[in-house]
Image (cartoon, rainbow, N blue to C red; front, side):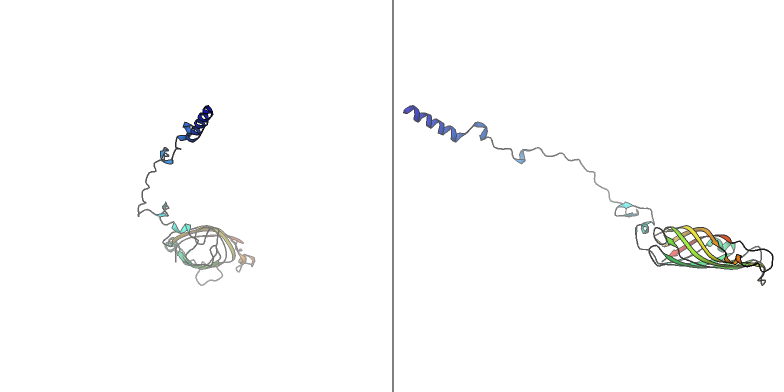
Length: 216
């Protein structure tokens, strides 16, 4: 009987204390090794004198290339033509992000001969990128009248008909811009018999322009 009571007491004491490994407290997060992070180099602020958009450098004067908006009006001319005897002005209006309407009037006065004349054109430039920026296709109508002898309407050259030009337009933030185009047209005046019985005008003519302008 005494032996049984002693065995029961020993079993109860062992159950209360438990095994030795159960007494070790679990590891806490504070005992874990901190994660190793790569040191990041501090970013230097961009100089205020550097052209940029949201911290990304862009060429000076090219911010407008990242905008959908554009200046509506554009007035241009060819300053080289004023030196060579061609005096003209072109006015364009942007109706849409990709379309504009343009009219130009030019007066020709040769510096070496008595030849003179005028040219009137109306066109609808179609810009593949954005109005006044990038490549464009320009269908239009042109009227041209030249006289090689002042006062003699028979001695001259007349041209009227449709034309199509292909060109490129560069515009900067200031509004200053350059347009270069070249193409060909159809001369309807060549279908009529020559007035002096000499020779007929060419049915297809080449045309183009180089203009420097200001958009606003």
